[in-house]
Length: 242
Image (cartoon, helix red, strand yellow):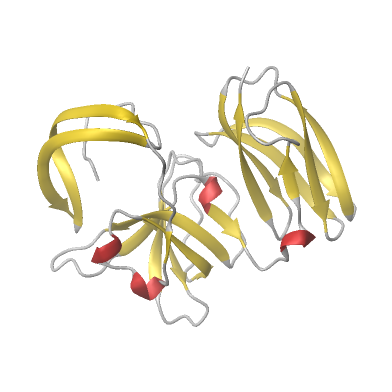
């Protein structure tokens, strides 16, 4: 972690940076503080997350991008409203191990519909603990794309934005296949979690559906198209260019 209070280095995901400062520790997390220099060197390739069981959370993966599969909610903490953060306790199928799912406000996860459980989660492994700093490990998802619901056959709930992938320009088609008739919502959010467009809302029958979407009036940038039913949710990241 790099701690830069009062200073925004304007860094983007995937940037390679050179940082000069003091190495310290805060609540068990190693960090660079009192930053003297923060220089963007270029764009790199993000590493793939390491897939862990909850029992493997520990110092060896602190600060790493990790993935946990098929986890369940283990408490009754409310899902955070927009602008709020929350600590949600998650567990494995046996209930033997628990880890904190830390949702920060401003990640575009706060204020969204809670996923159904079990889910797969990708995020940064962090720690919030007191001495001797051997507990309190957390997983911090970066955006809605890091939360994926499981328990449904892959071909039973298909969802695709566009025919050629990213980037998207002009008009595009959103296709989805429902295994049964249900109420759905199909919305577009920006990186701040703000609703940009409501594309569909209501009851749809079983089968394949296609929704036309014009992006001509939407600014260039990264967005998330979210399809939600009463039981399921899928999110796809899209890049819009002019």
